[in-house]
View 1 (cartoon, helix red, strand yellow):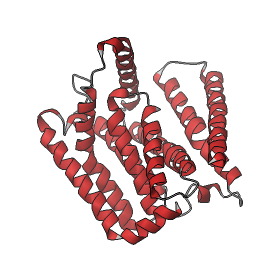
View 2 (cartoon, rainbow, N blue to C red; view 1 turned 120 degrees about the vertical axis):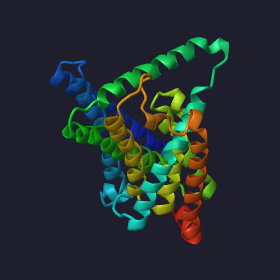
View 3 (cartoon, rainbow, N blue to C red; view 1 turned 180 degrees about the horizontal axis):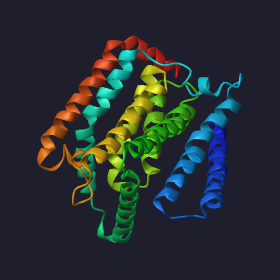
View 4 (cartoon, rainbow, N blue to C red; view 1 turned 120 degrees about the horizontal axis):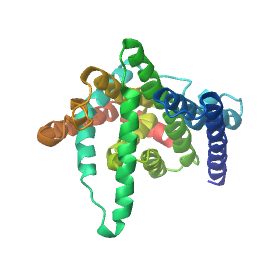
Length: 293
C-alpha cells in the first residue's frame, strides 16, 4: 500500500507541474486571451498537461520494461462485439443520465449552507456558459474540431488518469475483489468531484463507476475510452444538429427527464440488463480478471 501511496503522490506532483507548464504556454502564446479560441487553446493544453501526459510519463517510470501503454492496459483491445456493446450501452444510457441529472439538480442544501449552494450554482452557470461557447460550430469542420477537443481528447486523457492510473494504483496490492470495488468507487467519486459540477455529481459518479467495472471486466482501457467518447460525442453532435432551447439545453439534454421520465426508467433498466448480460457471458473470466487486477 505504501508503494501505491508514493506513486499517487508522484502522479499528482507531475500533474501539478505539467498543469502549470500548460498555463504558462497558454499565457505566452495567447496573452491570456479570454476569447473562445483562446479558451479552447487553454482547454487543449490543460487536458494534455493535466490528464494525458502525467499518466504516460509515470507509467513509463513504473513499468520495469518502460512500456507505459502496457502498464496502462492499452496494449490490447477487445473483441469487436465488445466495442459495439460499449457504444450501445452508452447510447441507451443517455435518458437515464438525464433523469439522474434532473433528480440531482433538485437536491437542496440546508439553509445554513445557502452560501455554498449559491456558489455551486454559480459554478454550474459559468461551466454551462463556457460549454455553450465551445459547442457552437458553423461548419462540419467546426463539428469535427469539437469532437476532437470536447469528446475524443477528454475521453482518452481522463480515462488514462482515472481508470488507467488512479484506479489501478488503489487496487495495486491485489487484495480480494472488495478492494477492487473500493478502488472503482473511490476513483468514480474523484472523477466526478474534479469536474466541480455538483448538480451533475451523481450521474457522473455512476458513469465513472460503470467505466471502472468495464475496465476490470475487459482488462483493456480502450473499452471505457470508447464509452466515454460515445457519451461526449453524442452531446457534441446533438448540440450541432439540434442547437439549444430557451433554457440553454437541447432536447438530447432533457430526454428521459421531466414529462419523459418513464424513458429514463426504461433506460436504467436497459443499461442494467446490458451490463448483466455482459458479466453473465463469462462469469469465470470476470472472477479471474478481478483477482488479477
